[in-house]
Length: 203
Ligand code: ATP
Ligand code: MG
Image (cartoon, rainbow, N blue to C red; front, side, top):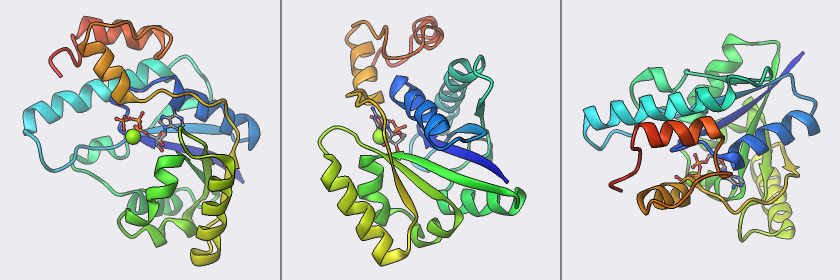
């Protein structure tokens, strides 16, 4: 049985926090591949602006993953042309790849917000969740939340051990807007892409 990690996100832009989580999941759980899955656009916002932004988000994920053999860009959600939900995507992946065990990789903020996700109960049977610590949540809080979701929904969740990186796409967008360096926070190719395309400058 193949083991595939799914790293979902907005990736606006992708940064080393996302990539390191993917790499740690790959190593710690002996996964075969990690699929980076940029989500489609939310329904609000102007359509043209949205389209362009999606294209940039996807291009940056491509640049960040193209030279890593076990990392792949999945356009499953990006090409749908609307916002898609994790429960739908995971159901579709399970149907399409019946001989694969999926692992959904996420950070603490997502683990603590998961009960707000659409039809979140349907996500749990489709994958094993790998949850990494982030910012203010400590290991005890993480373990309690994992236990709680397991008891209440039979969710299968493992703690994903990874170096703590206090980096977010929000910080990077703000730094870019303030003309501060984003070196070492995103891969060089992504930094170059951001500069060439003047991304986030008027945020
Ligand atoms: P934004 O600031 O725009 O919300 P973000 O950095 O949180 O961006 P997302 O695309 O929202 O990035 O996150 C995708 C997934 O990656 C989420 O599950 C999030 O918890 C996780 N993640 C992002 N950055 C980190 C990090 N530094 N450490 C651990 N998990 C992270
Ligand atoms: Mg986020």
